[in-house]
Length: 319
Image (tube, rainbow, N blue to C red; front, side, top):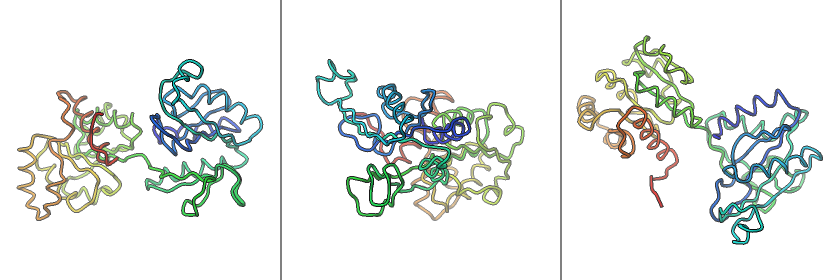
């Protein structure tokens, strides 16, 4: 489950329950599903939102949470699956890793601290350094937020809180729908813009967070282009795409791509007559990883995989 869905589930549960349990990954070693800072919420009915162990640990964590609901004490639990004996005597997961996690109760009477603050930070779309106390730390009790820039010791766990990506799709044709649908499944915020009202109103675009009717030649005035991490230009209209690229060339998005073959991209760049060689170099096109995509759905998958790789600064690989 993405950070966005976790925050949205929290917003629902805080209106249904008086308390929840927050699980935070404190430390890992070896092969693990999650790394430090990943979080999960558990409600009193044994439902959980998020994944820290890929489904392997969550059942046991729900049982551990019952104790936390009961006495409100912060608990630290360790799952060490690195020993071969675990296959016989332990949980038999075969993950060959270690995870150390903290469970703490969140209460309505305490404004759901600390997760209410964490959720607010995620909604600001700015990476933020976070720190939680693992044990009583000076004037702070275990499970409270702390200053991540303070002197580091074993009583604190720090991580970078990364908000969900924001994608802008410039073009609302039929092939925009799978891009929007898959991106929303990933928990991204997706906006779509077009100059054709009839395309924007199509039921197939229902999963877009926002839809904007724009004029391509004034798109930078019609919407805030900076409110996106990644932009894909796919209007299938050469002049409209040219206007979009003119507006985008001076901005610093992590990813900008234009749908279509390499020849079309070059034609757009020739007409753009930009002196910014950096923009020409970073403009992606044809968009998407080379995975043999040959349908709107697989092209969307290839495109979003490429964007994810750029946002995470991780080149695609298999090892």
